Image (cartoon, rainbow, N blue to C red; front, side, top):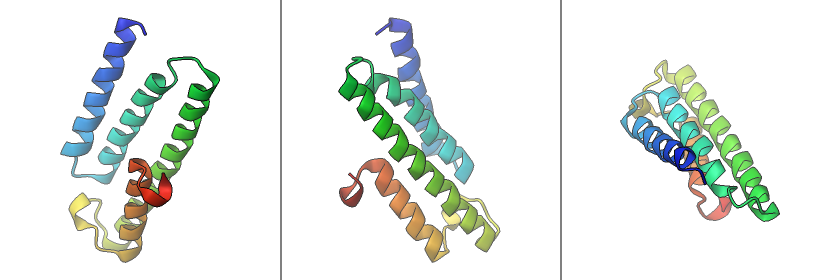
Length: 112
């Protein structure tokens, strides 16, 4: 891998993680997670083997669906509570959806 591309991927991973950890708003947390997703895909598919490309496509599809569920969960929570703050996750439906989406992003047991 080109050293400049590797530097940009590593910097993007650090930036996305920092944005996600330090955010108080759902959209900023989602943006940080998306930066991480887009930064890791070239690292997965860098060997140019058909299985690596297939794995990166599957990874992208699962991560994109989990991101859509996170946005849907935050929208439901904002609709019910009137707040986009991460600490105000009080609606049970949005809490369940967010838990499922984070489990998908982490690759926990039913979603691995």
